[in-house]
Amino acid sequence: MSEWIDGQGRKIDYLRLSVTDRCDFRCVYCMSENMRFLPRQQVLTLEEIERVARLFVERGVKKLRLTGGEPLVRPGIVHLCERLATLPGLRELCMTSNGSQLFRLAGDLKAAGLSRLNISLDTLDAQRFAAITRTGRLEQVLRGIDAAQQAGFEHIKLNCVVMKGRNADEVPALVDYAIAHGLDISFIEEMPLGQVGREREESFCSSDEVRALIAERHELLDSAEHSGGPARYVRLAQHPGTRIGFISPHSHNFCSTCNRLRLTAEGRLLLCLGHENSLDLRGLLRRHPLHDEPILEALRGALQRKPARHEFTVGDVQVLRFMNLSGG
Ligand code: SAM
Ligand code: SF4
View 1 (tube, helix red, strand yellow):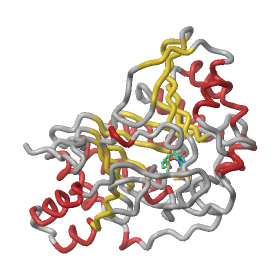
View 2 (spheres, helix red, strand yellow):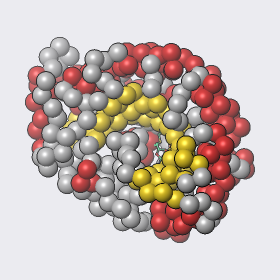
View 3 (tube, helix red, strand yellow):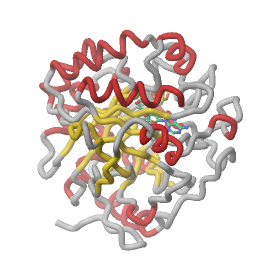
View 4 (cartoon, helix red, strand yellow):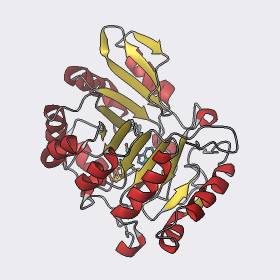
């Protein structure tokens, strides 16, 4: 079986698939208040998503992550999980979700073969939660986290985008919540994707600042662990069951070990989150419904063009795409 190796010699074994650009939340760092979503025919069908996943898994991709938008608002998502989970050679089928629908879907997702869940949680305060997500209800997400644990998901990881003036003061409380529930948690630096109608420099909080906040209360042990992604991890000396991750696109560049590609909801294969460099897979899939070879050839060519690194700077909107299109 051949493998996917990019032009910089990096082995690509991780594909993130955005299954929809739609979402039931409008998080302030991700979307604007009034979003216009893609017309249905521009979004990949579930069959097209499965076909792309198969082409990658057949050639060495070991990990798939379903994301969005909110993957759980896409009709047929449980069935898609069932299909993807059986792809020979796949090691992990993961999902990143805002958690709002887990209270009703967690059991079905587990039964369908989903192996891991990341759940976004930026605050434990109901009013702040409503302000950050604009439409979300904290209580529903906390119920979803409980449902996922009851369904048997292990190593659930919380994702928290840290913003000064909004939730940075809650870092210790979020760590306590993770410890109490036996969860991992990653703190994410806000990335400048899309014009979201506010200045990001004012609220930017670096991973070093977050780490210092946690270190005031806990002894941190550096850890060489990684989960196939860009996070750096520490463990807490007194609570070894909880892993804390830092995802720092600004302060700690992680491009040299980038092993991933992203497929947008409309079928563009993004070679790097920080570049517009992409391949229109939807056009290829629809022009060649029966023959994979032209698609494989285009993929091989595109991989040679995967950029060496991104060039984000705080506050600059270099990439006009919103995060919900590419799935983070
Ligand atoms: N809706 C799902 C969710 O919120 O988990 C999946 C899609 S969301 C785009 C994936 C992740 O990206 C979430 O953890 C979210 O917090 C994060 N995210 C969104 N916009 C971001 C930004 N501008 N900078 C950093 N992280 C961002
Ligand atoms: Fe929706 Fe996730 Fe974006 Fe929030 S971060 S608006 S939940 S896609």
